[in-house]
Length: 95
Image: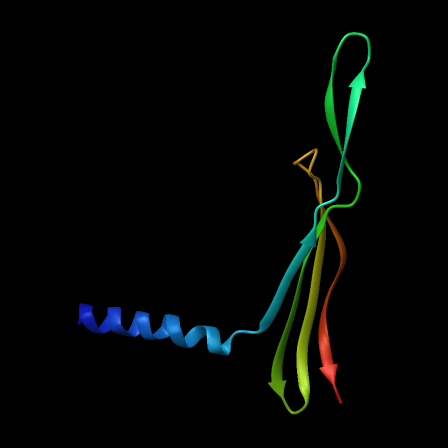
């Protein structure tokens, strides 16, 4: 019984990706570095300019229709505690 479950799990792992939606992941890292000296401290400081990442997904649901989605986030690089949503949606596309 245990061997049958393991075989089923392995077969499912190979079959599942064929049923998944097509997804594209991308992003851009945009950071400016600046030397500073304020009289007391000096060094190199990072400033975020426009770092972001995104994922586009589409899945054909038949009948000329597809489910589409775009998820995009601004990611702070210099200050790692910030993640802001931008331009994200999910919807239907078709005739």
